[in-house]
Length: 243
Image (cartoon, rainbow, N blue to C red):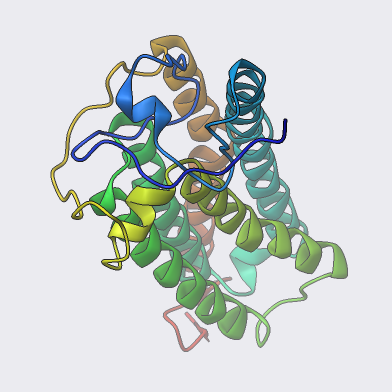
């Protein structure tokens, strides 16, 4: 018997996110999404739970680590292009800004229940990140060499957050639709801690990895640019004038 899609969900139920244990007795774990197909019996329920776990695993153990590695590769490209003495600390500041624009929705997804508020934060942050990325490339291309490899890395840095957002939306479809007033239930704008929370070990490991692979290297990049500017060999300001 084929699985039959069912639209619905319990009003007021909080959606789950990432590796929460799926409990068929919990109303929010039965919330409909395009990845779910309830109503077809035990076989469909088992298949639905497996699809949730696959999507969750992709988010936790593939997309997020790949984003961190792409950020490190981008930093290495900047270093190879001698960014401290070409584009200077102004571009490094833009890199840190883009990191913060992704870190905010990421922390929201890790720590809070996914609802309309979190989706709004994700959408605003994504638009800001894309605008800052365009600003960054427009500024950098006039001042330093951007290799084909670095351009390819940029494509990962732009699309991985979008891919993660799409998967989160699929897992919480009703909450996503509620952001636009298209769901059967009203939008939930209340920030609430994730219940149950994600494993502390995973959150700590992810934050440490983000600090070591991305935040730390980009702060070091900014420091090198500021040091070069003070020494009179670098650039200063968004006009790229040498000291």
